[in-house]
Each structure stands twice: as C-alpha cells, then as structure tokens.
Length: 73
Image 1 (tube, helix red, strand yellow):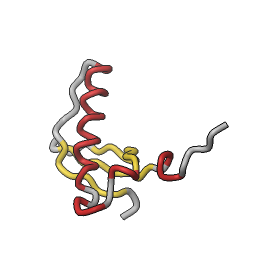
Image 2 (cartoon, one colour):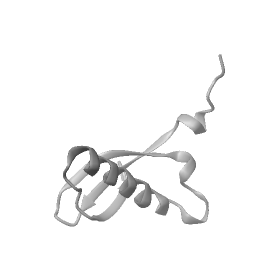
Image 3 (spheres, helix red, strand yellow):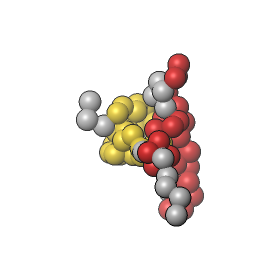
Image 4 (cartoon, rainbow, N blue to C red):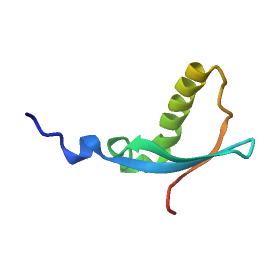
C-alpha cells in the first residue's frame, strides 16, 4: 500500500466573509496551492470555485466573497 505524502493530504483552514455579511468557517484549501510569491491569495479563487459547485448542487448561488482569512488568526 502506497503512503501519501503529508503535503498531499494537508489542508489549511480559512474563514470566509461574504458581502451580505454571512460567514463560512473552516473552509479547506490544499496546502500545496498556497505559499510562494502569492502567499494565501490562491485560497480565494479555490473557495470561489468551491462555492460555485455548492451553489450548483443546492440550487442557490452563494454570495460574492468579501474577504478570506486563515482560521485562528
């Protein structure tokens, strides 16, 4: 059985604030997508893509994201 590397299974949690004032806590973003020159900037695009999928599945589109911050900060 092959073992997965820690970086392939690690996530960073983010809290999301939407323009309508609603919040979503502990949204998972793969750690491999973060870092480098962009830092946490890719997290917003990843969470926006997740929101599109959630909206399609539920039939209710999610509001626009106002801000994204790492959980626990």
